Length: 161
Image (cartoon, rainbow, N blue to C red; front, side, top):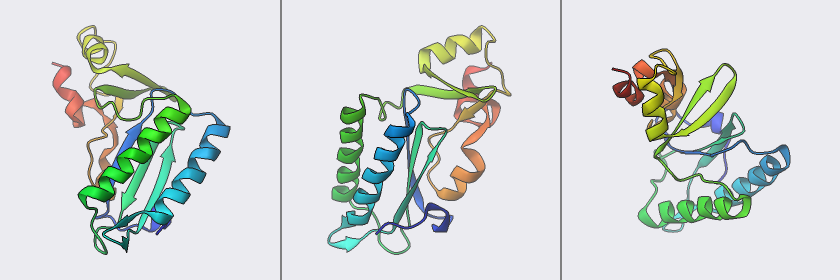
């Protein structure tokens, strides 16, 4: 069952899918429609899942699930992965590769392979204060507090020494 992302409790589980490029306005409109349809029908063993989404910076799809009501199962998680893979194919983007880093350069969101980000840290092209996106956060509360943080406050900080 589709619910407003803002109405999900702070304990809700989240999944973050970062895109290797910004979506266009037309793509965002289509993606929102697909997300509405998918989350409206998303179930676990026949029970509705109370889930919502938000899209940040035209490149991060964040799906939240209120697990206080019904938990995701292996089959429901597999269904969500297949859904994301369909988006990847339709829009010719990469949403599942976790070995890439997104960070801010002013108001611009940059996207680099982890090895390039590591080299940038060695070259001091990024610093401890560079804002990074920690896509490993697991709950809505963590997303709101620890997703967009200085590199020194995230797992990215290990590359800065």
